[in-house]
Length: 79
Image 1 (cartoon, rainbow, N blue to C red):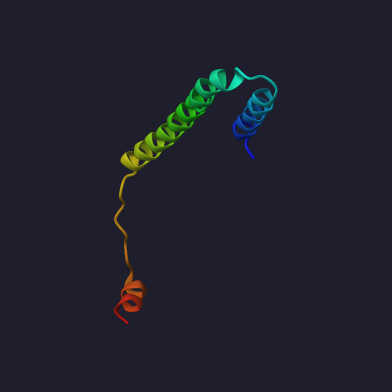
Image 2 (cartoon, one colour):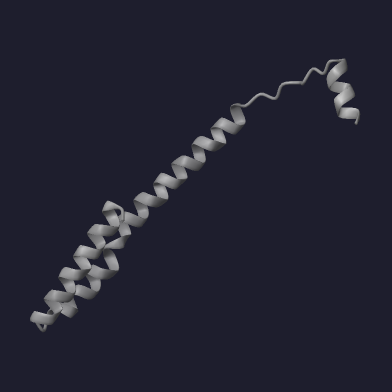
């Protein structure tokens, strides 16, 4: 389990325990539960976007080279 997922599980567990002990906690917990994943989702989306951008730059920078076949290669390919 990643650090972010572990943090979410621990916070949600704390909210459930708090809701069990204090009556007003569910009213406070609902906005927290809805807003808590936002930064983690944003960071993951930025990481994936950066990764995609790196792959795109790598693909654009690749230069195709022509293959040179000798007589033995042509014979093998003709079979």
